[in-house]
Image (cartoon, rainbow, N blue to C red; front, side):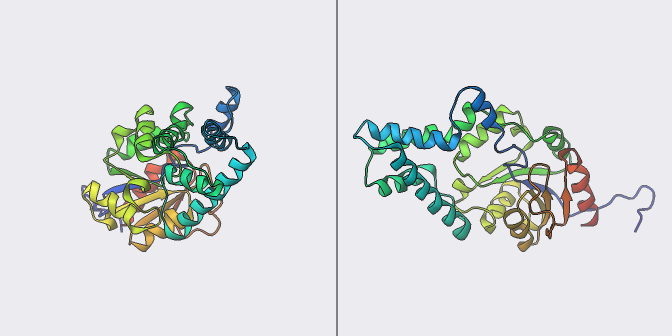
Length: 262
């Protein structure tokens, strides 16, 4: 129904939660930068650093360490996908050590975890094209919260990353899985965002690139959900999203259109 002249539309949509990786930040865009600097890929560097740490206490082959780290990654991925829990990187290191039948002093494990958790601060990935202007525009009309799984870099490092991009100023909250205790699509992630923004869950719309995590999860709570496909469009064909956004610059318009129907 069209609005009468001078009439103000009332919407119950007050806030936007938004995924981080491949929605705000281009996940693997740091890899070419690492290569240009003569650095190993992140996956290889994690294994190399654990190998170096172990070598100081006794000989072990890099191949053995790599296999153990692969086993730890597989266990992490199962726990993440089945139980919606993301282990902190220190726990993944300890699983790798158990696979090897080796130990490291606790302080060395903690220090190695800090180094691995800061790799994306040392060589920063790129922002998704146009996302900075999109967030600036959205922040004028909605409260914003990052809702993101922390796969390697922990919440504090991710906050610092956003601060370096000068994007933190647009957000009223941050729900990172290592701090919340559960990962998407668990309700706790979106409920944490709602508490931080002081809104009801149903007053939020979530934006992200994965159907299971970013669409099905929030919709199960009564939220609207937007599938963002600028970087990853693997779920586009069969999505149940309330809307699809292909470019960051279109995101404010897509959100406003959903708000108008809410």
